[in-house]
Length: 90
Image 1 (cartoon, one colour):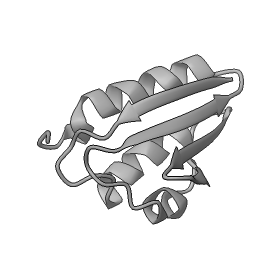
Image 2 (tube, rainbow, N blue to C red; image 1 turned 45 degrees about the horizontal axis):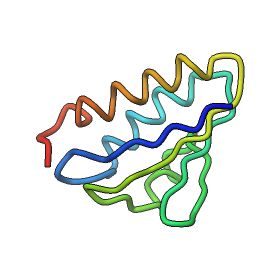
Image 3 (cartoon, one colour; image 1 turned 120 degrees about the vertical axis):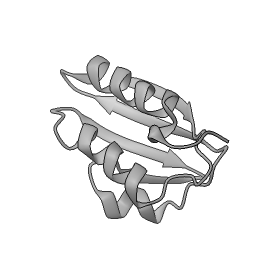
Image 4 (cartoon, rainbow, N blue to C red; image 1 turned 30 degrees about the vertical axis):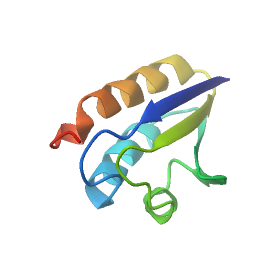
């Protein structure tokens, strides 16, 4: 299992479009993936679950990734966060 901590660096936080981008990555994965924020844990393959966390800009989130493609998924998520979800950074 990989636990990856990432910081939300786009101005608007995890709204619908970034949540969809996360699910685009996680939904295709064979691994089990959870996202943790502010004491809540959600299935990272569900756009509704990701959006319901209401993650604002500047927040730290953790991903728990467990499965055969966990390293690839962790790398893709890290790239997505580092690219600020193709939005303006904070």
